[in-house]
Amino acid sequence: MIRDDAERITIKLQERLAHCPAKASGVTAAVEVESKRVAFAAPGGARPTFVRYKIKIADAGRVALLELDDAEGLAAEIGPDWGADRLFDEIRSRGAAVEVPGPPTA
Image (cartoon, rainbow, N blue to C red; front, side, top):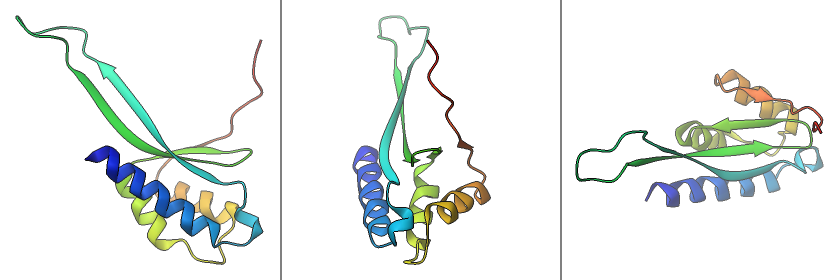
């Protein structure tokens, strides 16, 4: 169910960004899955795995991970005059980190 919500939000973001001018071209939205297996197991049971879904928004030089609620709110606010800079400024104003990946290291 949560995976379906994440996919729905991602599609909504992509549709909204597609209606922005060329300034927002190159911005992508995708579902990011984080899973963590607990280090201990209950007697007679397997180790549980916790899964979190986030929305990854990226362009050529920036990457941000948003909680589903934040991404859904952002999708509702995107207007046709938004560009990539305004999008990432809005993400920062919501308290999410926007990272600028460095060059790959060998």
